[in-house]
Image (tube, rainbow, N blue to C red):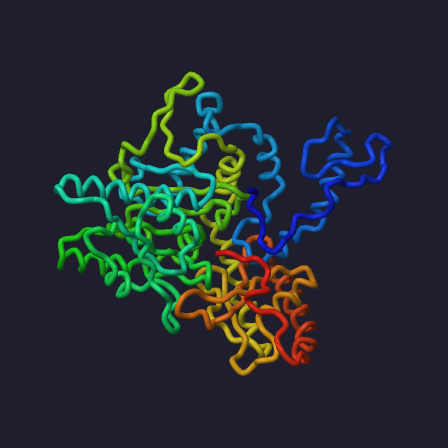
Length: 463
């Protein structure tokens, strides 16, 4: 069956009654089967356009990490490349060259030991890149176990419970035991101490997140690596680290250059990042980068004779668009290091100012303040019982804002919070509008005798 939102029924009747705009269309158009004949392109466009008007405004979507604004010149470049298949490297050699340049740029940005050995690839998004990183970890562990004459049938991977769902998919699809570390008290992500407790000879790696989706905080990558160094000294077990830099990989290099989280740490074997988040590209493009060629087992790379050329590929799919890769290179060329620093710095300034304004309103307490990723979470004071964060989210939706409310995972299910993701295109002026709308809604909420919405009635939201 088709996958759909569990709380949204299939809309409308079987047939769509069409307004006779052009006297070119039939009276009814079927929704769930192919029409018997053709209709005019203007009519097809208008029908679909009108249905999509009910979608939310992407610029007011504070839930998504995905880019919702690009410069017109980037959009023009993308429109010129919609028909280019990234896999056809022989037919589109210059597009392929731009991908190679992007890999080289990111390798240098993340301090690979030898830039001449830049090893990586583009993907459809950070989720695919994370899975490729996990596959490389598993295959390296299997080879090491085989060389030592040991069994390799019970691999496990260690990570905090705050990981994105792609890591659950990786563990499920490739039969790896997930050792999830729950939250505890005010610790909302993975710690070095807790990571070490779960490691053993079957651990293929530890995943550290540079920017948790729950609250925008960085996990202590350097501390985790140092603890694993000590663990290896004590046990002889060498456990590599993969950094999920889906968002932080495009933030920390520009705003926190002194923070060591990348290949400056010898234990970091691979990094994934999302070009369509703080890489500032429309969906979907991601990046996977390895420390060197040895970190990516050669047998995972397929050489495919396709359309007259023998090409290497390491991906979970085959065909995919080249436009997003070209847009990524446009951003690198257009912004440079200083441009990215200014864009991300502005986002962080908006986030920290907005979080401070929210804290001053009275009903709210900050969980984080947006001073790592430009992302922060906040909650209601414990003494407020007559309305919930889910009521706040629904009230703001009346004004067009999509502000997610959710409960934290295992061990902190008691904590219900709202989260704001500040990204390019969300300005100080828009933040002021959000505060104004919140002030407009609070008096009504404060008159409620009891909460109306809870986590069971919340709008769909996934990390």
